[in-house]
Image 1 (cartoon, helix red, strand yellow):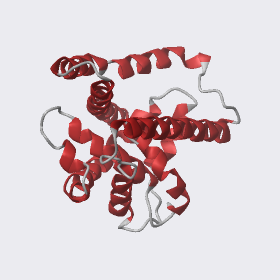
Image 2 (image 1 turned 60 degrees about the vertical axis):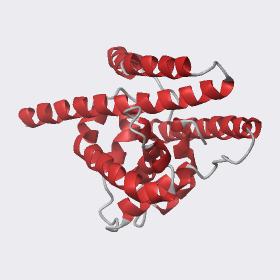
Image 3 (image 1 turned 180 degrees about the vertical axis):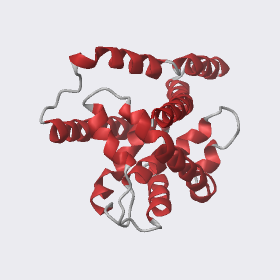
Image 4 (image 1 turned 135 degrees about the horizontal axis):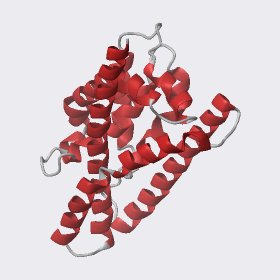
Length: 235
């Protein structure tokens, strides 16, 4: 499952076990965090982060840091989302009071282990490409279906857009577009280094998406911190 945003699909079946012994937010973060090793580009952690040692040496500490940041700024950040996404995502910021102490680290490790469960480095590239497309698009479709189902359960409708909050949608659309300013140079640089083959293109897209996620996380954390201080001043 090489497409970064498709990795969380692998942990969806574990949600039913997240009442005490697992943390669903940590599972999702653990499934994505190995790809953050590609940001910033060129530090050479990509291979290490995608190994068993990297699960403990990279994914666990970075994932735990991401969890601390999420619980610190996630609530004010998600309160700023437009409906219906605000109502669907806000519960993720509230920890289960009955959750065991080991739920977060175990969940981060499980998520990181599922990240590369479909790696096929020893196969010919044609087989790799086929599995890359199959797992990536299946994972993305599953995530979209699960999210739409969650919206429908929360609001009674599968609509993902509210015309009453058009300004908020425009603001968040601009925020999501902002990281492209850092991603495009990285993608073009990777393509310029090698020949324009499909393999080079696939790796370039993968690295660019990892950089996009890294830049987006930094932007969202800054916005969340600002909203947290603004909320504190109002209180």
